[in-house]
Image 1 (cartoon, rainbow, N blue to C red):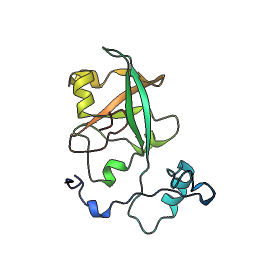
Image 2: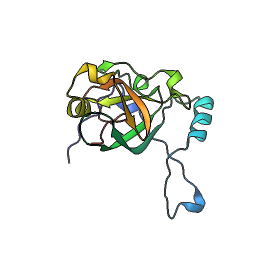
Image 3: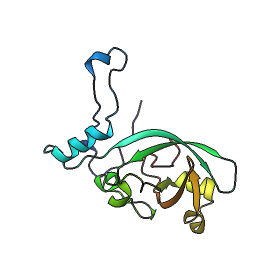
Image 4: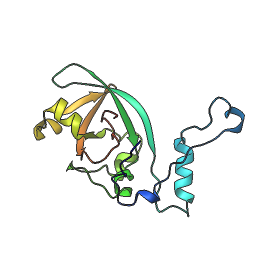
Length: 156
């Protein structure tokens, strides 16, 4: 198998952290980090330059032309792209204010989804639509070189 290198500024410095609960390790060898533990680790970390959280999920997208879409998605902290030294190709990144509970109504679409669902039209990006019954607005579109779907982007 051949693998392409990750399209990040410093791929050798990226690590993945998961949790292990010894009593459950026979059923679940590792678990995703929960938000509470992540915030504690982020506040206390002295070994990492930054920590970001990525949580897999699926969402229903409705409210625009076309049928509803069931999408693979990633819920991410606002510092993920800056940590990767990456910027959306169009629009802006998430703000720290949007990282707070109740303020998480902005999304960054993958280029592929933006072109397929919104026809690559900038005016469509600014319209509201619904994701899981919440009014949502697109603040940016990721470049195709970011190999991870962000927020409402379909998973590869």
